[in-house]
Image (cartoon, rainbow, N blue to C red; front, side, top):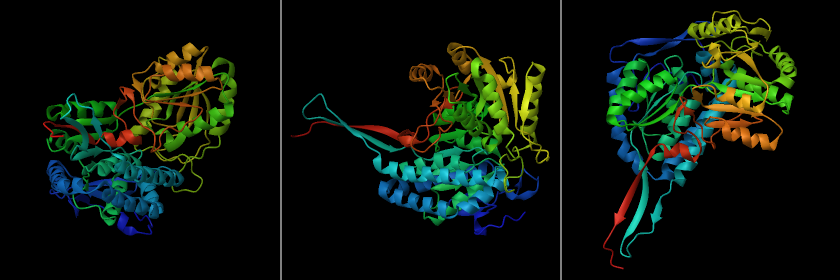
Length: 487
């Protein structure tokens, strides 16, 4: 499959280990397809434990020199990487749309978003600080220093194949930690293109490595290695729990951004037009395949019908089609299993009394496309009440009063994001302080940006990415005691 790139060197079908582009020792490869058409784009090496160990060794060898660089020297290299990402944004977006399926405009937006993390953490690296603690004796001093944790692993998902890499790797690199990246086998080309640009920016060999292929073998090698001191993972709660168990024997530091089941609450005093616009962006971006998308829309009785009508009008304007087709706003789902899950959730909801209230016009009809729709009459006994649908289905739940709305919102084992809409300041604080989520948004659907901490509570994970906290995840605290000073 030809992608018509301005810079064809960005489409790479090799792993990147120790500054070298290489295949798997077995010679085995994994095909990568376009979810809109099923056409094979190319292949990548089916790497396993041996290649992962080689990447870990390369990172370990690069660690002393990388950590010894000043924060300014590391920042300069990250700034070059940032500039190259923006310079090549159009090609990176084409690669992303080809392998992931999202509309080209969304891919372009993700590349710009991904670049913000590189820029932010290049600057944050200069702001790593310590402390001096007043000592109990006149001839003693107590200093607190921060040091890079060491070789770090990053296992990234397919739904944001560029941004999840920069959100993890930029703070690691800025802190002085080399990284080994395992991208999703469904979307490896975005990761490899970023690696090429990192290499072009002058980031030294072994500091940034990408291993493609066997998720079980690669993840197992990362979790069992005593050299890998930190592991960051974005993906399902099931896999996150598995990685946590596997990391126990090496007492590894973990950042886990896991599943979500975000509620979007619309109170009777909300600005309905704002709530509808935000619900559309939150629910249907990336065809609903985001961990922070509004999985459950909770609407107060008095404005339920008006909200549903406005939302239906907005959904009717969606256009389902391949991501590279002009005008497409909803691309394909990533694979047939994703489509099957969406169908199962809809069928389950209908069997429990929900109704299809509205849907988008019929668009592309390939096997991986799902028609966006609105369900009314949603209830707690439906699968979509406690499972991520990860597709373009907007279920509307009714509630009568504020207490019931909060109870519905919190009635899940997940706690990544919550959204709510009200014009009442008192209610805003009451609700925000009671919602069980790592991120709460009032009158907006936008919660992920480089300067704000991102992460969840409950079964949605631990640790934070972004903000100043993002770089702290890659730093260890060392206390330095000095005694017997002759003053």
